[in-house]
Image: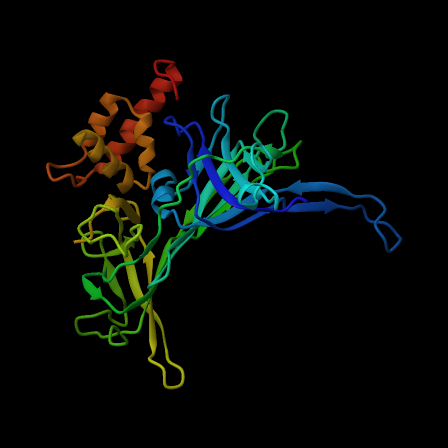
Length: 317
Length: 69
């Protein structure tokens, strides 16, 4: 039997000089080789020759360990660079064994995918009111080696990391401020990084040679049932509201083990400040239910700070 | 410790992960910390200051005067 479930992600590039960072709390995981098959034209209806023309290996995952991710992956992502003691980024899945301890295989019997070279991007952060925040990332494997080598290495005899981070759960805190306007009736907050990039494939290889960032147009979306926010007098006007790091923030509150939420004064939370232009994009209501309003902030580089600055280990008050 | 906290603040302000702090030398951490004011807030010109530190570091690495981790 060969059935597996998500275990953890290990980041151990040359930038992790202090040792590997093992991330648990994996909520989704997907891997794809993205193989394109080349076939010559023939006079017959069926192909008679096939070869792999290109592969763009990717691994996507999401996790609840958002503070650990934000502390270890930058806004423009993380370059996956390896050497003899830093293997890159690894993705682990634990093998099932109904007769094993806790129904899982022990020892070195698990699945591991390694990207020794490439780029790890944060795709999105979703923070629902009352639910658990998750952060989604995608790793893109490349090969710049001469000659090129397979960037996607898979093994079924791996040991899983012993202590991945599994004690991080966060939810939306009670206050967001947009351009100095306080918003309290929040139903959801999300951040889409919207990274536009290329993965050129140069001659002599079927794999991308590098990941080249073109543009990052990060977008913050806030949903609220306070439908009074579109107001040219003192709130978000029809022409939007300018946001600066000094007057715009969102807060993400950490859950505490064997309790509820950490107190606001505990230095356990995450604060994001941002600059950009906030506009109200949509207002809707259906039936007799309360309506909903959506604000989007197209973020901006103000010349001093990154468009969004995340700070972990923060008090909220 | 104060230098490290300020250096982390600078790294965050520039969209860099705070774990990169471990890649910097004491002198570089001090230079990063100098980009914060007494209250620990980044000062005007932090972007240029940060880039200058990175460029100096890269130049040293290329000269073989420092070793990458």
